[in-house]
Image (cartoon, rainbow, N blue to C red; front, top):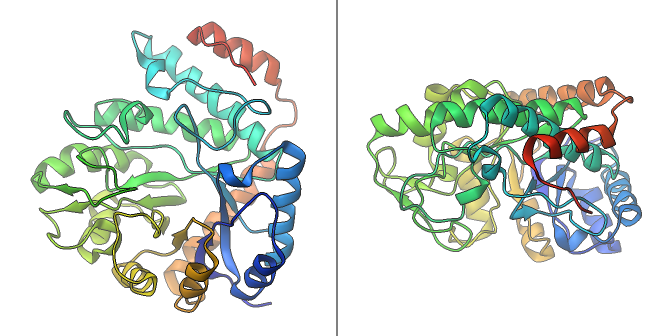
Length: 342
């Protein structure tokens, strides 16, 4: 069987189309990522994730952004609605808030695994700066690097306990962006010393994580012309100053912060040192252009992918079957005052 290629693809809708099935079988992506457009019901979603794995010909990772709060691809009436995570820390005892975070993401993991999703693109380790765009805002875990790292570790613990692999994002930090990188390219003029002391510091304690995602942000103190995703200098800082040695995926290459042909985005990111391309919008013409320029995973990227998949398998088999979701909900509500509703 052919090895996997260095790409994670989205798809157009809630069912796998015949054209998509044939394309995914041929292009052999490392994984898939789902969005609200792909979600209708638990039964439909379980069928879709099974179809994606069948098309790929192997047990590929299936990713989603299920942060809770503003960014949640699963929601009522079938899945729980969550308040923004930052609100858990408003006047709360830190230990109680950390327990609540573990419970929150343990419950989320239970919901994801039930429909065949085993990678969640959290935690955000971005430290929001005063005056920054609200694209991070209440999605953040705090306003101080050590607190963000501590709380991010709790997110990871909760997900892993339920058999879901986390993705730390957005390396090396999106908290200073004055514009939303979904729509335009942020530029950050902060001195490198400050970046290392604050932004990088939130990621260092979790640099051992298996999966990470880049930020489409230009850090002028490191590379004045290229955003992190395309910058060899910024990727080197992620690897060496932060110490991240996991599988590094790009943020979505179809975002409007980026310009140029899709083929040049792919080659730019891979040349800079990203391991895997993330292409989310499900546009078939764009996906074909991406696939034409994507190599098979090889060398250090293949080793990192293998480590991530091995960890994914280990936590899936190690997750307990005796989890009492009702008791977890009750304890979470006791800690936070939040009543969970599906």
